[in-house]
Amino acid sequence: QVQLQESGPGLVKPSQTLSLTCTVSAGSITTDGYFWSWIRQPPGKGLEWMGAIGHAGSIWYSPSLKSRTSIARDTSKNQFTLQLTSVTPEDTAVYYCARDGQLVVRDHAQGSWGQGIQVTVSS
Image 1 (cartoon, rainbow, N blue to C red):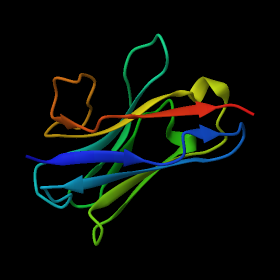
Image 2 (cartoon, one colour; image 1 turned 180 degrees about the horizontal axis):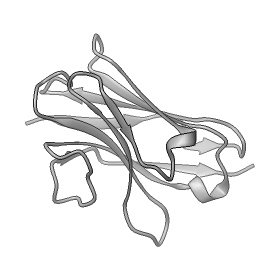
Image 3 (cartoon, helix red, strand yellow; image 1 turned 180 degrees about the vertical axis):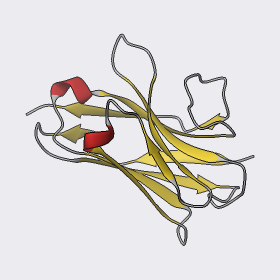
């Protein structure tokens, strides 16, 4: 069964760039038919899909975050990454990576998820 693990700093200063990596095991990010997503959940709020990269490398972003978000991948390491620029305290959230057959992931019941990583934006 595929496993996903988020990694990165837990604390980022305002105006800086948040960078996270999702390491995938027991499955390849180039396997046809899957999308690899980033999702976040701010405290007290619902899940927010941020964007995804497909098995062939195509990338999609949430319109609300598109101007600040960049998703990429390293197939040699079986990893995909998230960068969010110009962060503010409102970007404080638990960040998840996930795999699903659908592009947009909005529910933990969909696909396979990492355990999540808490990222706090604070000076």
